[in-house]
Image (cartoon, rainbow, N blue to C red; front, top):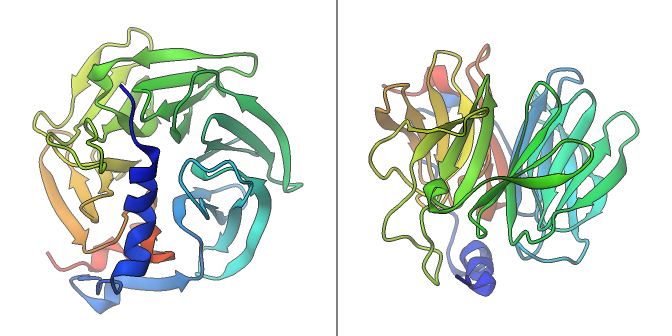
Length: 297
C-alpha cells in the first residue's frame, strides 16, 4: 500500500504556520526544569551517560526530504545548547541511539553512524527497500534495530549487512523501538490514512528477540505512539505524537496521561535516577525538560 508523504509533511509542518503554539498544561510550573526554543523540527533526544550530554536530531525540512538540511545538536543537561549544528548534511534525521561512542541515527532510507569524539560521520548504510526509517535501538552486541514506519518493517544491521527482522501488519506500522533485555519494545502508530490520522491507533508491544514472539503490553488501541523509554520501575514512558501526550504505561498495560498539549510529542529521553524527562516538542521547535516528580497527581 502506498502512503502520501506529502500528507505527512503537511501534518508536521502546517501547524507551525496555521496556529499559535498551545500553552503547555503542565500540572505545576515547578515541573519545568528548562525550556529551549531554536531547534528545527526536533525529533529525537538521547542522553549519553559517557559524555553527560544530550543529543537532538533536527529534521529541519520535510520528514522524507533528502536535501541534506538535517542536523544533530548537543545540549547540556542543565539546558544550554552547546552546539546547535554539531553534525550537518543529514537527510531528515530522526531516531538516535548511542553504543560505545558511536551515535546511530535514521535518515529516511539510511542508517548513519557518527563518531561522537570526533563529531564526524563514519558511514552511511543504505537500507534497500526502506520507505520511511524512524526510530533506532541498539542491543548489547551492537546490533542496530530501525523501524520502517510506512514499510511496516523493522530492520537490523549487524555491522555487515542490513536485513528485515520482522515485517507485516502485526507491527501496527511501527514508530518507536527500544531494546529491553531480550525483548524489543515497539510502539505502533496504527494504519495511517491519507492525512496520517488512524481509524485504529497503535499499541505498545514486545517481541522476543530470539523467537520473535509478540506480546501485547497494551491490549487496547493506545495512540499514535512515538518515543519509548523505561521508567526504571518496570513500566514505560511513551509519547503519543499526534495527540501531543506523554503517557505512563505500567507493565500491566495500565495507561495514564502525564502531560498533554504538545504539538508533536516526539522521541524523548528519560533519566530515571533524576526523574527527568527531556521532551522534543517537534512542531513547536522546542525541547523542554520536566521533573516528573513535581507533576501534580
